[in-house]
Image (cartoon, rainbow, N blue to C red; front, top):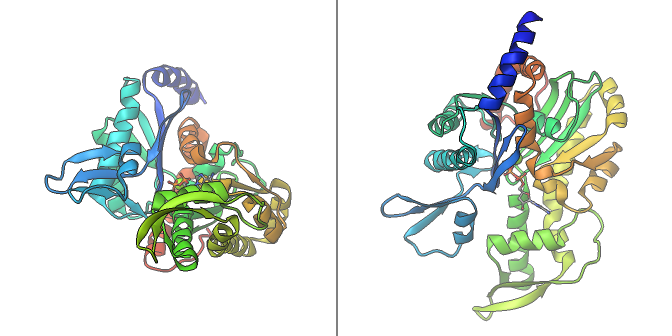
Length: 369
Ligand SMILES: Nc1ncnc2c1ncn2[C@@H]1O[C@H](COP(=O)(O)OP(=O)(O)OP(=O)(O)O)[C@@H](O)[C@H]1O
Ligand SMILES: [Mg+2]
């Protein structure tokens, strides 16, 4: 107790000098949050290199604009694929640059940092992130599963005795967790997310309209016309692309239903993942969830109709968290500010890491303690 009180005073002093930072290194977006200050950086997880010299040309938003339309001498790289780091050099540049940008905005004592990396499993991956973060000036790094950070960022009190469920639908992965008493009861991670929906939209436009669009256009069509369940009935969207029959550029209307049909398989995979994890839960946990419900986070939570679809298929009331795109970073930062949560989550860390590793070897089982 005494120690706590000392920590309290020192803690306050330290907090004013040295910030607590939450980092969400996502497949689609990287978000940096500072406790007490809010989200300070949020940019696409993309890096552009000069192909010849290897020099970094752009990071984040600027690099995203180059994707799909740059001369051969520039290489645009997404360092994460399906929730795992596929390009370590680019991941290092991305984390280093964005954390550096965040810290430069408010120069202070080296921060403590907590990172959520989708399926950040192998020691090599965690080390790679840690090195980049240290190079950018942070003094310590801790890791937390996305689902846990997402739950805290969504405002759930994960120390409660009753179970709660969170589904984080990102660009490359969907992480589903059932939590209680600051611990993980069940966890599963699907390699399906918004990027796969974009790809499905591109494929469907090619096969049904003989129309080829770039990844950014496919994503925009998803924002404008995407849905789960019943079509909301919106007017066609206009898109630019290539007419495959005429082999010429063309502007044309795209109907809502075609986008919904393209997304249906991916959405079904996500919903089935939620149902499958629920089925493994003990009866008392299921009963708790009837009251506490399911909370959706991540960009995919914004798909119209998805929350009702999940609610309908699981019979568990489902809501979308406020500001779902930043939940993981905000939650990570807030965990760092709670000695109780840090203490209670620690014993799970090793087991979870081993589970993430088994995911990689193709054993896609859900985690249960
Ligand atoms: N309004 C929206 N409607 C549909 N999808 C959206 C919307 N806003 C964002 N998205 C999608 O959400 C995804 C990005 O979400 P998020 O930033 O949570 O992912 P991430 O954390 O980078 O990825 P991951 O957690 O898989 O590593 C993208 O695929 C994006 O297209
Ligand atoms: Mg994410």
